[in-house]
Length: 142
Image (cartoon, rainbow, N blue to C red; front, side):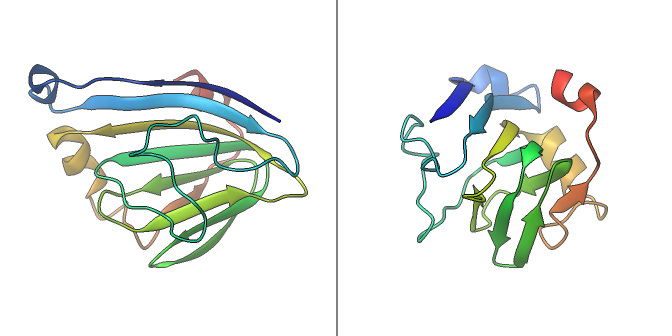
């Protein structure tokens, strides 16, 4: 069983002129042994573990409960409560909660010139896509 709360937004040309726009925001609690990901996501976002996926946007995922794994062409990362990982546009990836623990994830997908200028800075990179920031209620509130 899962608890999903998400919203996919329709982005128009006018939105892109702002330089930063959100495509999706949500949270999911995946119980131990539950299937992942939920089949309720649009086809451009759904993926299966074997094939993974490539997105045309950034996504920031923040794990607040449970454990799991995140893989990209650059490496394999263990996730725990307080892990924040960044999915970069054009980079193959896949992730899932551990069957024993499940997890709670909070996520936002976005793009735009401002986002690309900021996240393409040396401090962030597809090679260092996981940050362990701890549990911070301020991040969830944002």
